[in-house]
Image (cartoon, rainbow, N blue to C red; front, side, top):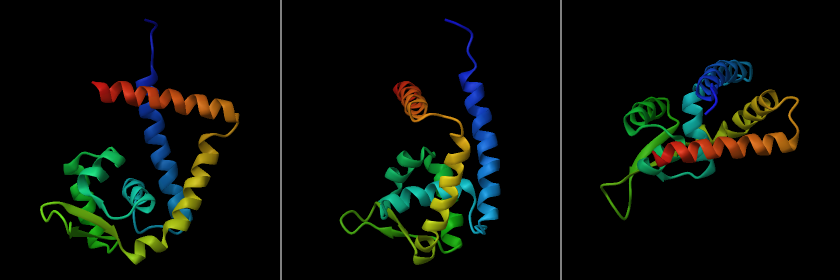
Length: 143
């Protein structure tokens, strides 16, 4: 196999992207939550009222990490933990009206981030790139 640096490059992208995204959030006047917490809210904006286990899968966050982040978001009034009506042992995460009201602003920032990320890429290059990233994720999940 040829010498590769994909993992290192992905780590660099993650670090730089995080800093740029935080800056864009601040510029948009979103200081209530950080980029990592935004990832949780983003998943819940797509589908609200999720069990913690499912939220963990969709965000890629370990349950222990997710729990502490949920604690902070709950303290700030962005979400609530509710017992599942059909299974009281299962906890569901539900967005507050406050969190729902920030979705459009967050989506705007996310769109700006995508513009920065894919600047000078053709549609085909974006499609190929994302397909390859999904293949890497699949390979990693199989291990």
